[in-house]
Amino acid sequence: MLIPILAAVLPALVLMFYVYHRDFNPEPVRLVVKGFGFGALATMVSSLISGPLMAMGYFTLEPEGFWDCIRVSFFGAAIPEECAKLLMLWLLLRNCAEFDERYDGIVYAVAVGLGFATLENIEYVLAAGADWFSVSVSRALFAVPGHFAFAVVMGYYYSLYHFYGESAPKGTKAKIILYPILLHGVYDSIVFVSNLGAGWSGILTLVLIYFCYRLFKASRERIRLASTDEDLRARIMRDSAPMDDAPDEQ
Image 1 (cartoon, rainbow, N blue to C red):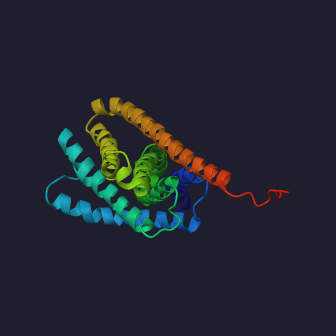
Image 2 (cartoon, rainbow, N blue to C red):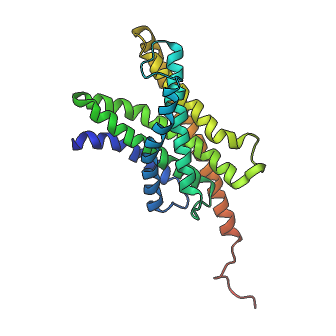
Image 3 (cartoon, helix red, strand yellow):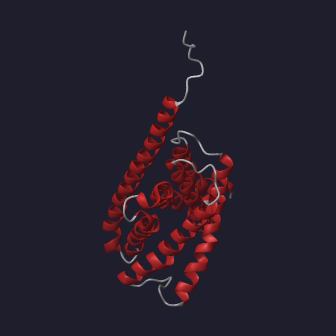
């Protein structure tokens, strides 16, 4: 029991470590852990959104065709899950004095996203029984990095709007939720459609691998942009600070 749980948790910890140690001024560990907890709570909040959507007929848990797969991907997963994560991110940061640099938004969004992914991962791995190893490897390669990438995008635009407001690039506020939903929906659509039959499976597995590669590459670029911006701000502040140790003028 312990080993499957560790296998489910480890991928998220590795990605969190990667993001956290790119921070020029690391965030308090207690807040990162709190973000993980909020992410786990988001799994419950998302079910409060997806449940009514399913009751209203927006999707079915047993998709039988292409459009059923699209509907369950967006209405059953992407929309409720990303909305729940954004709500938890807002609750985490609304009165957070430590949220004072652009990169911080990515750190906290990733904490929330990986907290969500971790609890979801544990559920899938434990439910797999004897097949826990193959399930944990598959989710470590695709599902967890997917949640990581959606969170990086959300955190990037969340910070951009938080610090620049209406002077941020046009559409920034909408992109906070729109882009993660689109990316998540496309990801899940590929997964669900590939399960429709053997003909779809082989081709779409390659498409999924390429899609995940592009997701991670785009995520790294946003991490680089935000961390570079933070590093530049820190250098400017350091260079403009008075030099207390400078010799007095004679």
